[in-house]
Image (tube, rainbow, N blue to C red; front, side, top):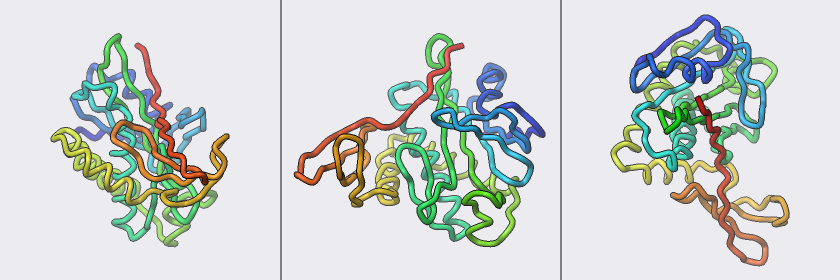
Amino acid sequence: MKLIELEEVDSTNDYLKREYQNLPMQTCVTAKYQTKGRGRNGHVWESHANENLIMSFLFKDFHKIEDAWKMTQLASCSVVGLLDRYRIKATIKWPNDIYVDGKKICGILVETILDPDLKGVIVGIGLNVNNEDFQSMKQITHKEYKISKLAIGLKTFMLIYYNLYQTNQFHKVLEYANSISYLKDQWVEYGDYGEVCFQKLLDDGSVLFVDRQGKTYKQVINEISLHNK
């Protein structure tokens, strides 16, 4: 996988959308400064040198748009694996946030490139590393981290999990994702359902949960942005 390291960019996701035709089948990009990045629901993903790891992955050898939601789980498991390497225990808050000690430390944004048919999937990851104002790796361990080293580690984990997907072993990714779910077996207020207990993420991208009366529900909660060229 080709790694592109930029000094400054508006958005690593947008960079890959603009340049995808000129890039290898699998490419990832990082930037020291990101000025106009965005996360899910319009949240801003700006970054400054040595504070956050902002990294986007392009997979052009991806052909099933109905499987795009699976990329979120690959990325989630990759981030949790990276954090575990530094003895930070993280969990996945579906659909695409990573939590440590009840606080968000990472967000994930998955987008498809339609030109007009599916040309690729982009996975954007924003991890708080040395930031003093938010939950971050530094706040948790009181250590400073090198962004470049973390980027290489995250690329390695993404390749491992993407290979599992490519070799029809996504069930292993799903099992791991379910084992490290933030809300698994907890009772929480959820919309008009009242108190519910989330059971597991299913292989069709929906989440299984049950209410206090024992009634079971399934709901798709993964959010994928469609980008038309």
